[in-house]
Image (cartoon, rainbow, N blue to C red; front, side):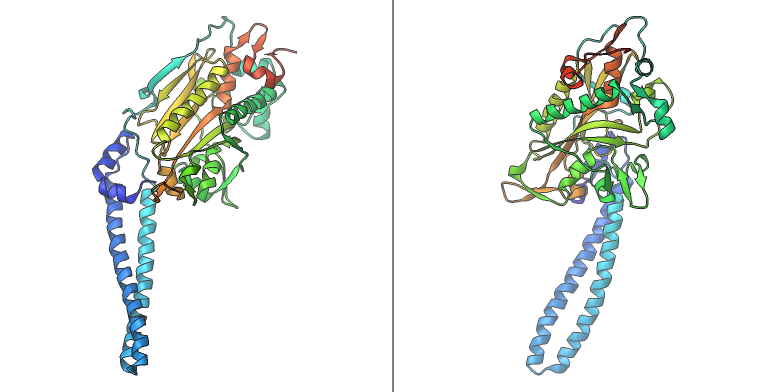
Length: 425
């Protein structure tokens, strides 16, 4: 959430920067500034009333001691009026603050100055590309045919038990999935991350804190009776560990990693680009989360990029890194880099990771602060990234490594899988 003081003091800059995200903020910002003016006016009236009430209370005691009972009684009547006025002003103040908060949560985060203009993913900027794109044999097939051929992932069974987008992993498919999770976690631990295993359900405050609510309310699975939400990513519970906390500057940066299942209601369009593992309602992901000093957060973002790149290199997959344009960057992000791997059988790039800096946007919502070396309390910066999301990684591994005799497993995973190929047993 953007800070009101910054909006008030930098009105045109906020409007211009949000326009990069193709968001017209002019009306909302005018409303916020007007509400903030009302808030400050009411707050002054309330402060004046409370100050007068406190002053009179002291004077009343002195008047009684001096035997000036009538003057004291007149003042007491005034304190009663002031008490009622203070209550009315307090209620009015709370109503204005509540309305201002409702408007503030509608504003996206400000994009970083380096975010390119654009409206769709076609306008994203390719930063780098590495790895050799494999040339497959003419009889190569996409992963949705391979999983049936080798009986390792069952969409029909998932549809029977739950519904579309909830597959069963079986046999070597289940072992491959588990091996990837363990490999990603082990690599994160070697890089100095602290592992958590978070709850898969979060409360409304947690969803609000990281910005999924109210922005993505319709995309999250909601349990109405308990008002819980299934996590769309481990980012939500892990970042909210630090909600309403004041950290020390020496605590930063904080580096956490967590594996979780992820749940998203968002319905995909029809076509090969969302077929098979390309888009699921439940999928597994290892997430890295940082809490950083504002002066260091963009250095941390580069370190996170390097970590994700090292994982994809170890899996021997060709990949590219993109800087997302204003129209494709998320509501909460200031700057996002996407990682895409090339799927040789589908002949297309598949997104497998987003690494983002949210600056103080989430921290302001969560009241996540730290005491700096100068003794001042400041908002921290939060960052997160997929390291990695499994479905499309699995799709690319299966497709790119298929041979007439089976599917080869990358060398880095063999110690985890215990087998070198997936074939017809």
